[in-house]
Image (cartoon, rainbow over all chains, first blue to last red; front, side, top):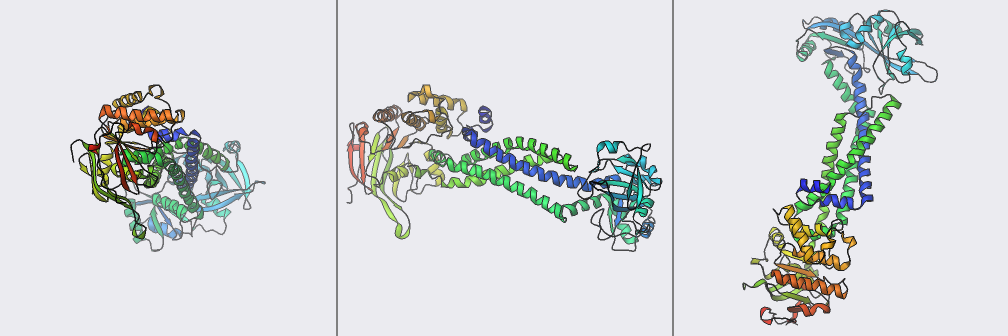
Length: 390
Length: 245
């Protein structure tokens, strides 16, 4: 290792030698960096899972534009939209189809533990609005009180979910009615509900008798192939009488929902602070290690200064140490982080996992912040006055 | 400056502190060190020996008077110029100041690598040769913790001399050593200095080594009070302005 580093730096790898000279302290420093990495990985994993869980229901539908009430910051929040605005939108020659989307929470009392499904009510006849992996089963929803259940829902065993087939349906009571699950699809538990459920709009309205078929939560629109989504959305702003409505591309609606969850909702803000605190803890740990190391070697550094070595030489040593700590600390950090996220994912059924982008982001961040800590730590070198050696 | 003088100081004064706390440490120092000589600088604690050493070693800026080192005037020299000049000097400290995590060879290599453009192989060979000269060829890969006090100081001598400096400044290099080790270290400095034409300025309280000096200079209260030839002294090369006591 020393030879390799000597070849890379073109000088003795003094930083590496200093760090490894006291093995106990070196491993303690690596543990500190790894701990900070784990902290960031867990917080980033939760942030990512929030993003995955937030965006997941948007993947159930194929739409180009979504019309929502002015206070509808998320798919399951906000007021209703009058169906008449969908009819006005259909007057635009680029709009080929419209769908009223109903959203509500449906509980399933399972004795020891209730499951809450975020439930979408749709017209099962409009299959072009439904994602391909679900569309094949959507015809089943034509039956009154039929449902498609999320097989990844929290609180339902995988075996139990796998047994649900049109030939072997599962019936359960909720809201005074008996729903029959005829098949399943892959959703996943989120931070709001335990899973998802798809029903027809008629079934939805029977579950929520105070809701009106004339006022869905959102209106989804499909455009003719090649139409400019942004231009059509702008046109619809002009065309539709209610100027308070939010008319956005479906993709923008999903991203705005995500931004809202991450920056406006308490959980998102807390997780964001978690990442920040992880980064700060890492920065402080690496700085403390390097700063103590510089203080321990002030006499040697002063000797080097007396011999004619300049500031760049010392900066090189300290940054070398910072990079070694950052890189070697990352290895156990990513391994432990992966294990913890996997375990948390299994326990919570949240989509928690180590992703390549997370690993790369944390690695680059670790290296950059370690180097930054090193640069800050070299300020203590000002105390190394070679004249004091005599 | 005479061509055979490596350093020549004229009317050198130095102060520490500012305002009412300002205190003069050196008074009107004149001295000249011939090339290849070994000069011992003696005096009680607080007499100004260390200040002279740090000024001639470019570790402090010259405040008043003239100091010409290897043809360069130090009064008014920039920090970068002082640093560049230090690369042509060798330093030996009382507590050797070896890097604890580097082997003897690596500690000596540091003394070569300060000069840019020296390749690694040459550095390694030069370090091994320097350690051989100080009698430590069998301890080349030892860490300082595994060397005796005398051996550590010999590594420090090798580090100071490996770059063929024009002048070596040594501060109490024998203070922590027993008689034999002290004698070895000074003999080494004397022998290697003479062979390479290196000038040595050695600050010490150690009377055991005075017989090796070409010149003995005594400071008291910031003034040179005696300036005598050693066992092989040469009075003609050293001057001392009359002390203002």
